[in-house]
Image (cartoon, rainbow, N blue to C red; front, top):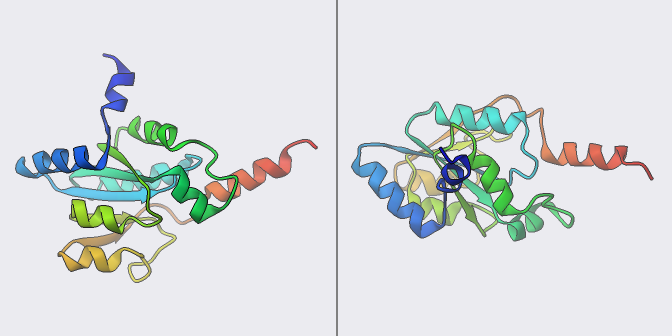
Length: 166
């Protein structure tokens, strides 16, 4: 089996994802959406995505584009280009599809995809999820999953920068 081909076959643009999602739904499957920058993949991300997959159905991971990460995190970010972040996520067994989105929030993709579940990490509460109203508007639900927020790409990046020899 050609692993590289299998991984890249899980990465879709938005139009492709809409078609794939329609096929999944025709087969009776539900969709869970998780999203983030995933700038430096760490154990907190893995636990978040694994917990999201356990909610059932197909797991779609939306990855912030390079431009949207810069807007959200500032200059010097992302560390890794969006295509590579998408490929890393697609390599995970729990992940069924990956899509890169250019906006700073995932509301537009939520309106298009209408996932049954929108999974967010424990740095949020059900009340503070920015996309909450979008999801509830069509009858979806928001779930908070993963381990306590004790891992952060930002913290890892800062630690590496501090340890770099002058």
